[in-house]
Length: 364
Image (cartoon, rainbow, N blue to C red):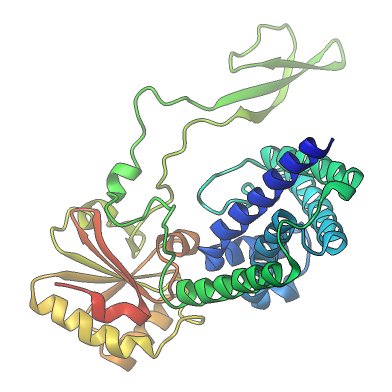
């Protein structure tokens, strides 16, 4: 039993540290996921949405800390009860989300590992069993080091998390797991291979036969039956291939210019998913940077989900010499974790991507 508990202890501890670190690498992205939980009827707590980023930071640092405490065997009672409370809460959350199809990606491992709602629930059930096993064998969870060294290691872990979080919040994630990382081609990311799996649908055909309603289920073919057709219900039972880049458009007056703009040899994108939440002071420097880019032959465009009145006001206020296009807010949030942020592309390939704090790093 001692060896089993030791293996489970290390496994659960390392898993919590890795899961927490992946989200700590991109706390802004995790805060977007929390906003979904708060607003889409899972938790039904919309008043928490403005505090999603703060909550995400607390949750991920606490997650890493619990993993470290478990591995070190420090504060055993507090650690086990905290792990149990956390996993019970997230098991309920992932079940509710999966059963009612509320949030399609739990965000457990950020953008590094995508899990379906039911996969997330299964993962949480397994962890729940392992944590209950740790409760059963808690007497075997003993400190690895002396108290002073253990406290030093815990303090270093917390400090490292805070410093790392501060860095990624004021710049960009150190590791970019998204399909818009530097070096990726957006147009290629939208492609679908010829041999890609297609979605599978199930059709429930309703007929009235001899005065009674009958339902015949097929995979698409219209059933041969002697009766009056009432209607059909369609359900996707297996998803097909979804390209890494989807729902990507660059629209203006209802027309999508993505195809032509992604062929530009020198393109600068100024992205601000929501101008109401953007750091508008950054546009003074963006004005200087984009003017320089235009002088060197670059085409510059703005991309936002805000309305034309807001973008027009912004252009006038900062004397911006480029036009704004409309792009879905979720897509813009995915492209860059900065509001605003700037990308430099060459025929659709992302060459540079910076936070508004790092505009001076751009090279034209």
